[in-house]
Image 1 (spheres, rainbow, N blue to C red):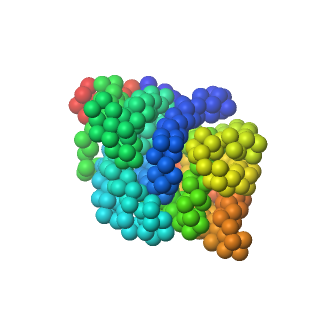
Image 2 (cartoon, helix red, strand yellow):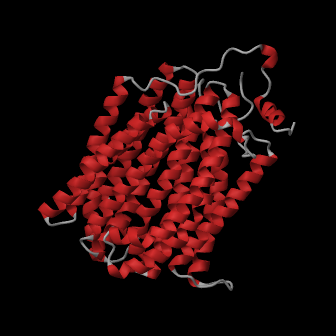
Image 3 (cartoon, rainbow, N blue to C red):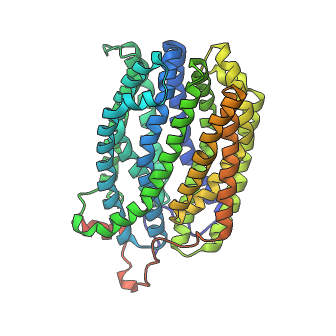
Length: 476
């Protein structure tokens, strides 16, 4: 049965699917990164080094908490894509209902926890004294956006699981444009708005996320989309929620492990002073550009693998892996070349201090040379995640970050008496993570779907799934 919503990724040209499906995701990622860069320019060039350092030390904390939500919605994407590929539209609806309950509850809970423990977390990161207070104020405001951001994560994952990566892009574009306009207005107090300084960037994010979430929910409801969240039937959600948690908890741990590793590494960098923190923050912005295609390629690969595993097309999954490696390697090698050849020009976009730039150049020369390793690991991890084996990719993340990166960063930075030891540790962790991921992919143990294929149905019952959902909720 061919669905009347989403995109069927189980047939047709694999390279074309990879390009057409991942391109909107990549554009969305670039939109978000562009806003992040604009925000960094406002902060670094107009509010100063202390403000930039405050955002830098806050970012790993935000990313850690966001990692929990992104991990749970990764489970949503896996279950939706496999249900869609298996033509299990009844199961797809239960996944939508269960994920809606989980994600909003989690967003509220983590907001409360974050508001309470923000100062303690920043102190534990060895945040410089002059940065601690502005970072705490900024972070507490920013965390208020969590429930709304989590809601957007969930809807985006559901839509992408059905092969629709364009709809989330349109609403993300509106959100980024609104935030970009609001930033200077709230930072400097224009058009009668209060001058909030650094906190103005956080409030701009909150306003744009709320409006984008409301608009996307309204759009899906008007379209009578099966992805449109409705009041769930709690009595039917038990098995689906347990399955979501079984996949989502390791995925959330994986995301948080990555983020906590960033917190630990940032803490080590902070020990070398404000200049090191600012250099790490500015160079990390370049990382975001280089990593963005690889991350979005991995997400696209996960959805393609999920749909094809759900349909039982294991041969296509191998082709997806090979094409993904080719695309990812080409893009990340180009990013490496730019980071190595033009480091000063790239860093000057975010910071004007020549001392900070000099230290940032050393980061790009060391870490930039290893971008391709990071990109390839996201392809193999995408296949593994698409199969629902998130516990495996969590173990790989633990190995790369906690067995290699964090201990080696501490050891090398002390032995070398320089923050450059941290740069070498980051590059080494990419090597180990890629080796572990490729080894598991080669084993073939991931070739199992979480959602079983649908049993052959009587042709008379092959109704339009969108209408079936409408009947189920009484809207037909």
